[in-house]
Length: 195
Ligand code: FES
Image 1 (cartoon, rainbow, N blue to C red):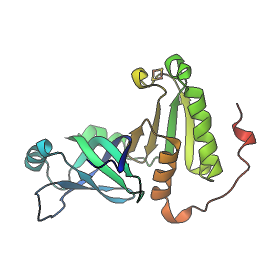
Image 2 (image 1 turned 90 degrees about the horizontal axis):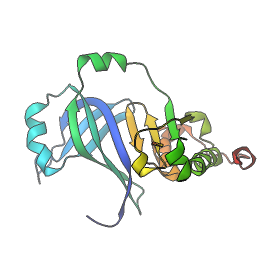
Image 3 (image 1 turned 180 degrees about the vertical axis):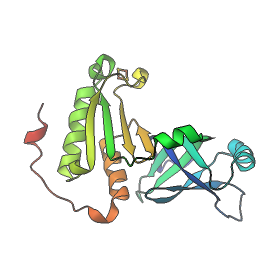
Image 4 (image 1 turned 180 degrees about the horizontal axis):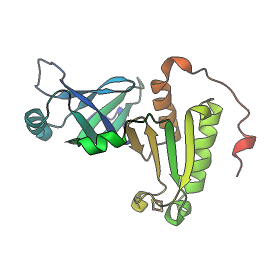
């Protein structure tokens, strides 16, 4: 429980279940998932470990919902599962097309009243300042059905989906996803983002 970890966002990741990380300490603590950008390790809470180990077969396509946390000193992101489920064949077929990163920012009344427009401008400015705007499509949307936690945005990268992202957290994930290809441009973004 260290306070060095800051909650970043909720996430949904889909990929191929590879098995569990082999550890001496505790069994089945981390599951390994193969996704487009490589392999990721996701920590399983104790109550999920027996169920997951008994029900999942390596090679199976699964969906993991959970929370991502950022280590305040190392900048490392940890993923912790809250729910794990297999993806049915039918669902899989629909999701084969590759997807560009997307940010959906709710601009409906509850979110607008609670800073939705400011959030949109801040995301646009932050991405532009970092020269990352080409990598993401930003969309204004209607209600995202999470009005209680307004202002809302959803960040989608490949099969991963994060909610309630701070703009800097979006930058962190984009940089990780595109590691070697990004140069830190300093653009003239200020004028673009005045709304
Ligand atoms: S109004 Fe924004 S999530 Fe409902």
